[in-house]
Image (cartoon, rainbow, N blue to C red; front, top):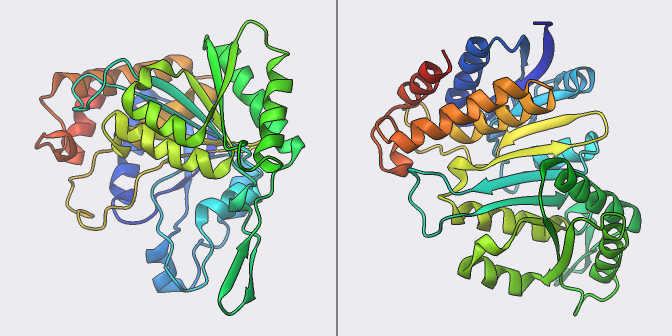
Length: 334
């Protein structure tokens, strides 16, 4: 298979352990990926005074493909989040977060299969905030028609390509009539171009209630940046937690995949972490690279290993190590 250059950012804490799982699986699958590895995160910053190893951004720009583990941002020291830096630098305007219930993972619901599409470049996360005086801070909620239509079209295109039946817009336009009103208007304008896909909208607070009551009623959700961030983690909680929540940040020519859970410093270096999320993110990457067969083999191997329950990590009640879980997945790939 032709060699593919891609950047791997292991990150902090358990990131190095779960990234090793990816490298092993990639080799067994014969993906042809050549990993260019770069350090980033709070641990790197503590030793070097900067969050990203020099050359990281240039390497991503050259490769157009990257996979990252969890990274922490030092609190109160003036560092900007790595995730925000990457999203803004590479204009990865769409954040794609699929969540589904998995056999073998304890949770309160069944039949959940939701895809969250989050606008990734503006809203309050644009970072436009300032002090009006020493006792008053102001943050600007920036919503543009261009970005709103772009993310909504991405959601409907994904629905069409992947056989999804309904896309629901998330908003608070009853209160924020101009900003969220513009997003909602953009959504319905785009929806008219996809008559075969049902389209509706729901106010964010009502959505949160409905998600914890009957999440299976939702198919796809598309949301501005802040709401999308919140409901992504909420939905992950519906299906057993962030240990099974992969993510992709998608731009016009660059894609960055990640495990969205934290760096878990309390278990770092102990071979206890669940690598499922980063392996699932790697599966999303393989699918987008056109390696559909490899992506499906990996997804099936993860799901079957978890469902069997013999080699699972402590976060879902098992006793297996990261190494043992990875080996169990690899055994199903061979």
